[in-house]
Figure 1 (tube, chains in turn blue, purple):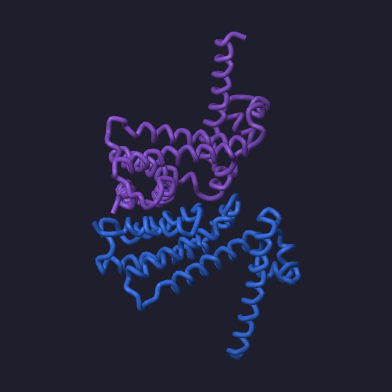
Figure 2 (cartoon, rainbow over the protein chains, first blue to last red):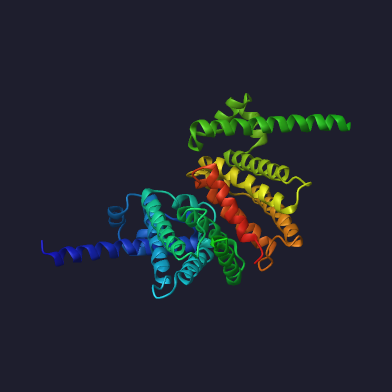
Length: 191
Length: 191
């Protein structure tokens, strides 16, 4: 089959997948996770149930794919926040701030039973690992530039940052998120 | 009714409750949450199902009570870690370290769907709030002694610590937990 045809098929598959995940996001936002069904997702996405089932075997698969897409989007946002023209200290602040703002804005979605259903599955674990690796590499660069302490490893520091910044989910304001980022960064400084 | 009689009744009630929660802990440890039923809890606790249902209307109520008891136990451990004879900086390190070790040891229990089922309900929220208040008051004391920064409030700093220390759940060793506590404490220092 010609390459162009393959690409057309791929693009179509991605479009259907994205439509299903977009519909999921809207439905969860409107009525919560408990009211989510495969039929409602299909209806909202404007496709038949049979088509939806061709892409996702069950609701858990939809939720996992949705969360995986979210984590990938976040990763892209973090990568965009790290302007290569800037010194590493600036990039680190910018990346941590972007991550904290994502937590701040998504806190409402993570309430209740949603967290458990979403935070599972090898795909999601893989996406989270890439997120952590991205931050670890940036921290490692900070170590080389002597901007970051060395009595804990870059892996541990990345884990520390990601956990500390989840506190942004209960921050009262964007100013509170800024203070949280400052706190987190000050923990990374060499003595 | 004489006071002594009331106290006897209360002691009996607490003993039955505790037996049910102890049985729950053992069963979850042995076979996981998915295999937990009211019948199995009653059987393991050596009581009839009818008795168990007099104390807890359903499984969710058992789990909520169990988690509430755990958080209260943790709170007692933290309070015990803060030796009033020690200066505030020592107490703060000791309390944060105790909390991090609790996270380190309980990481295995928090895997999968357990977290969602447990982290809900006003009782649990209340116990978590008392935990945070305890830490906030200690941090506030640190502020008075000029050991703690003032550009973020004690509430924000307590939230920051509790979130950062959940990273202990994925620490590789007790030494890793120590480093995490050092990182967290260094974020609290005044400039």
